[in-house]
Amino acid sequence: MLFLTSCGSNDAEDVVVKEKHVLKIYIFAPDRPVITRADIGQVDASDEENAIHSIHVWAFETGTNTLVGHVYLSDPDMNETFTGEGDETATGKTVTMEISDDFANKMVNNNAPNVDIFVAANVTPYNCGLSLDASTTSTTLKAALIEHKATGGDFFGVTSIADRVMAVPQNGLPMSGVLSNQVVGGTSPVYSITPRVKLVRAVSKLRFIFAKSPTLANDPHLSIKSISLNSGVLPKQEYLFLTAPYSDEVKSHVKTDGGYEVESVLVSDVGGAGINTCDDLNHYVYNSETMDGPAYEALINEGLTKQGSKPNADLSEVGRFYLRESELMLNGKIKYTMVDGDVKEATFTMNANGDFTRNHTWLVYGYFVGTTDLVLQVVDVKVWENVTTSHTVYNW
Image (cartoon, rainbow, N blue to C red):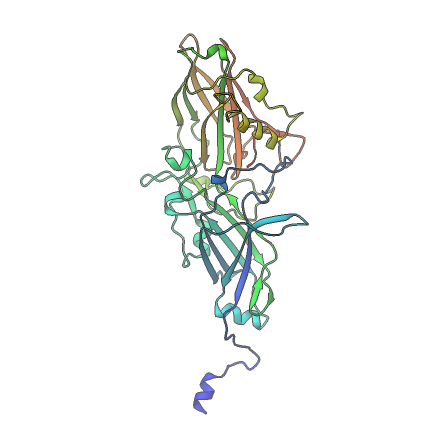
């Protein structure tokens, strides 16, 4: 009798779970479908930019922040197809997470709270200076920063141009997604949340495209001396996670009291030999009346590729640069020399504060016609809040 009493429940109405219960969470790959702020449709990123090498998924009780469960996946298969929002087909991953016995008991007894879901992809000490695991709390995740460090590296900033900035890092581009205060549905022992976590790249992309007239093919003076961002436009710190699901209203999530980078040289001494000649420089000028953002980027990418019997591509690219987002107006300058050899300067600037936000691209096309100065064109497409206004940013 003593043995039976010790094993009994203190509350006769509670059911005690005796088997493992799981929570299924659906995760979108970043561009399938892409989360679009502008009305320009989808822009396909490269395979390297899309690649997801690892995923951490956490579930916490809303309000108490008690851990419900955690999953870590290495090289997950993100090609699972399921029905997305509306009737569209989405490609991503269904993650199955074992949940705590305490939360499972609450589910069985119909008194479970809602949950907050955090997903971090490709986030490593090398990529972001962050070490995350099953013991990481929701408080730590909300405060997690991709930041400039005085020692140990500059993660996606411009104080020092490391290989993680000029190329996709070996562990992939960091991505994150959040779903807050979600109802858990389903029946024992398999539960799920209905919305899908939308992964967003936690960095922005800046591309510089150059070309020159065939008349300048052998000009020894033609050279790009440097490309730099001005001081005080790129924050030293940026939160890994947004404060809410990615939407039109959430433009950026930088840590404004962390300070800003000083003037930073993205690249120097490109030279003139590294700039391809193009017979029709105007062919690669953006025309908002005849093309949208994806069509223009496709045109640029085509110009960067050798075509048929053509020995060289029409265009040359400096970068790409994967940088922290900014709530400020990004601007900078290009120093170059022409026929006379004197160093000249061309400036570039975005349309408005907050345009250089995560998961977006900014394209700058510069071309040398002849003896005139470098001609710069900053691509503008429609802004997400107001489709009648031109902006200089569009989605990857």
